[in-house]
Image (cartoon, rainbow, N blue to C red; front, side, top):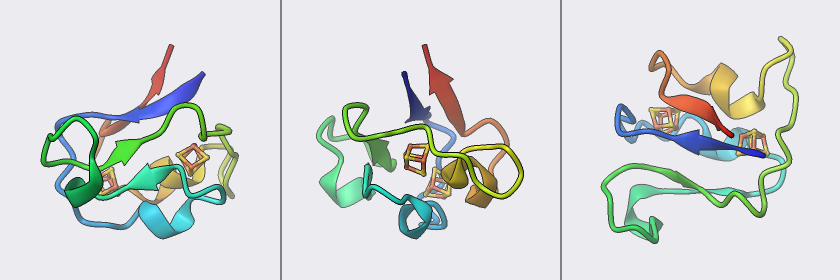
Length: 70
Ligand code: SF4
Ligand code: SF4
């Protein structure tokens, strides 16, 4: 499993530096061509941040933007 960034992403950039394994790329590097940030599922380790949530989810200001990709 991994997390996934959905199209409510506002490309604010808050998540990218929080990822310990550099699984997140910005909208310019999104391999799907979508204008949102992107998580490489094969790199994501579903890390846990300070509040028992993945670090990127904690940093993201947009509700339900980053979700578990099951
Ligand atoms: S859950 Fe953790 S490892 Fe996965 S993309 Fe978010 S910050 Fe990176
Ligand atoms: S923190 Fe959330 S809204 Fe900001 S770039 Fe990352 S996924 Fe998109």
